[in-house]
Each structure stands twice: as C-alpha cells, then as structure tokens.
Image 1: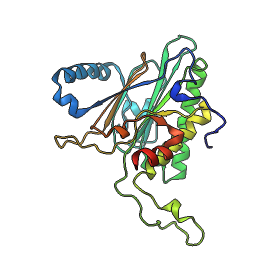
Image 2: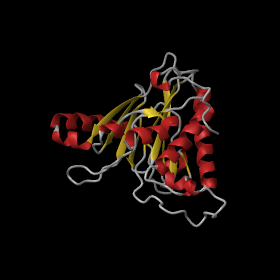
Image 3: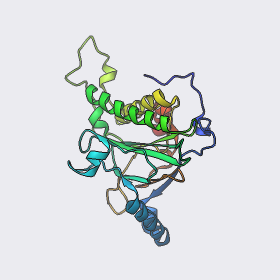
Image 4: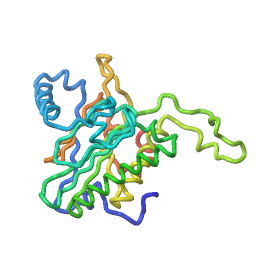
Length: 273
C-alpha cells in the first residue's frame, strides 16, 4: 500500500491534530554534554528518572526476559513493539535500526497513551515473510492505539537509521539478466534507509491516513571526538509528548525533520547535495 497523495493533512503544521500537541523532539549530542558539566548533570538526572520509572523497549533482550513476554517481537535484535500505556519509554543503541513513537489521548481517561518500537531493517528488508510479520504487528499496534484514542489526537514520529557502509555495487545472485531491472538490485549507502522509512510510512499511513514526521535524519556518524562509538538513544516523556534524542554530533542537514513520504526527495536534495 502506498501513501495516498489525496490525503493531505500538513503534518509538519499539525493539521492532523485537534486539541492535542505534536510530539516535540529535543536533540542532544554527546560532545556538548561532555564539555558542559552543568548540562551533563541536568541530563544525567533527567535520564536516570526515565530509566528508573520508564519502560525499557529493549531491542537486545535475552530469551525469557520480560520483554519477550510483554512486547511484540520475533526474537532478540529483530524488532520489539511495546504495549500501549501511560508509561514513559526509552530505547538505546539505534545504529541501522529505526524506531516509531506514537502517542494518542485515551478515550476513557483523557491521558496520553503511547507505544514505541525498535526494529532492525536487516531483519525485514530482504525477506518478504519477515517483512509481512513485522508490518502486521506494527499495523495491529497502530489500530489498537487508534481504537483507544480520541479522534485527531494521535501523533507519530520516526527516528533512527544509518548510512550503509557496504552498499551493493553489482546485482546479487537473484538477478535475472534480461528480465529484472538492474537498478532495483543495485544499492547505494542510502538505499536501506530509504526503503525502511518507506515501509514504516506505508504501514502508518494505511491506518492513520497521514505520513508521519521523521524527527531527525539518519546518522552519518556515530563517532565522537573522544573516539567513542555512540549510537542514538531515545527517551519519551509520555505526559508531555516530548522525545529526547542523544547521539554523536551530526551536520545540521542530518538533524532536519521531514515527512516520511518525502524520504527520496530529502536524501537527494539535502543529504547528497
């Protein structure tokens, strides 16, 4: 299912929302925190509270952990989708992985309810059955949120993603000469990211009839000035619809928000320029 161009709420202007604020993104970078002791202390105190009381959407759980019993998944390091509830949520170590954060207002209580996902594109991009399973679970969770929420109060944000350091320069063994389109088998370093965002966009639009915002672009680097390798970590303040993101410092063009349906244009005009 592709996003319907006739559905035109301007999500960047929150036209899909009534009496509900959008998810607001706050970006931190590790380098600035390390150089600013006061900000680092404030940051540490804030995120200790998340980790003490929030729900860990743990992508790397072990079999038998509570995550495997309470969250939709097909095993460690494939994908996890949290329950819908009023808890704050957090998830760590987004490299190639993408995440979905969705918040609505509960019909019964009037409080924000939310879920968070953390998924590995390598799991579902090259296997149709796995992709169907992931999309089915994501769509199921979106439908549950829609059913439980007041109309026009649901907002969704996408985060994560990384450049592919080993893009395909030649067609793989499945390519059929004279039959298949060679361009579909060739990949540059942005191909997996674009395909992953498109799958998320189509799944979300199928249920909610709008294209969600990608709060920040992909990681162009996970290396900090100290040489440490720091992936993206995210923390959702459910009550205030605020999503805190911390990662290695990026060029400004990698921090810009855009509509998921425009990922090809965003990569071509912003990132490749």
